[in-house]
Amino acid sequence: MANNAGIIGMGHAFPEGILTNADLEKIVETSDEWITSRTGIKQRHKAAEGEYTSQFGTKAAKQAIERAGLQPEDIDLIVCATTTPDQIMPSTGALIQAQLGATNAAGMDIFAACSGFLYGLTMVESMIRTGQIRNALVIGAEVLTKYVDYTDRGTCVIFGDGAGAAVLAPVAEGKGILATKIRSDGRYEEALYAPGGGTKLGTTHETIDNRDHFFKMKGNELFKVAVRSMAEISKEMLDKAGYSVEDVDLVIPHQANQRITDAVASRLGVPEEKVYSNIAEHGNTSSASIPIALDECLQSGKIKEGSLVLLTAFGGGVTWGGTVIRF
Ligand code: UT7
Image (cartoon, rainbow, N blue to C red; front, side, top):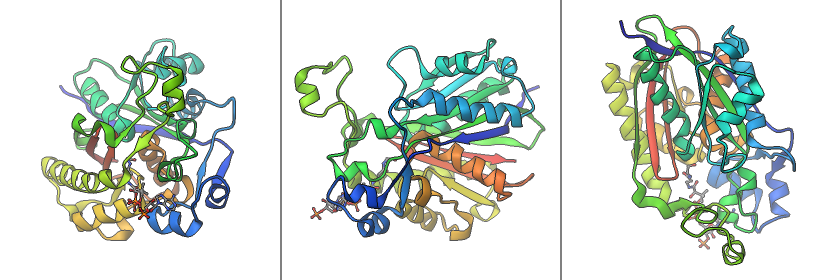
């Protein structure tokens, strides 16, 4: 019989360093007023020199494994969603595997920008359902502040660092992931990309002078597509799961921008109190934003046994996804 896959433990981690809007006012021409009113962000976490992505992924994963009541050896697969890996090779998932001592697991990365966590959930769900694996870690881990251009005020004010992790395993009938879907449209490549360092441009004096190794973003081009895509896939997944918007206890959208969150909620017709937001404290942490938010909601009791939760994400690629989970 097919297994339902659900989340049985979560964790999250941040670097200690904080970058406030006041700090950014000293770096680029911006203001707390602009950042707050355009994005909802007041501060973001920032890794120090010498701190890197796998460390935060491992910290979050350890907490998730412990809360699931498992040992690292019980994990069969580690999927790390990241757009800011420690290095090109090996994968951050493999590095996390070593740091955890998860000796029976395979480790790998997913490159789907801010939708990466939902990409991971979707892949792992089907592997658990078919019985190919039993326990898997899906991690979203990012140190975006090292890929952000602090001369570009259009991007540097929104991104922050952090990691969230979930242990997925078979759960009882009617619980766990009820519907999930991922999408992409690579025609939007240049709306959010880091062109340097790959096989196309390589790493040359010119790419470095052009700052091609940093993220470049056309934020306002992404805005509309993000709202439309997240609202559409959310409705589609609720339909597929056999629920309506009124049945949902909590919506956790990728924390891209408070205005995007508000616009998605309004398109879906979900009241503000049912939509979770932590963007003021953490900024946009890309693939880490949904698992961090989920863990915060589990810890605070906002999500309880039986809660119906809708997750939706949108990111560079462009990529997007929607997932309906019964806890
Ligand atoms: O994580 C998933 C993928 N990313 C996203 O989904 C991001 C989506 N986009 C956004 O969140 C927003 O587009 C931003 C927050 C990035 C930008 O906000 P916006 O309201 O779209 O601003 P804009 O880019 O249209 O710029 C409006 C004005 C411009 O000035 P002019 O040309 O009107 O004089 C910008 O130069 O605001 C200016 N501006 C700033 N001013 C002060 C842009 N960034 C800043 C800044 N401080 N940091």
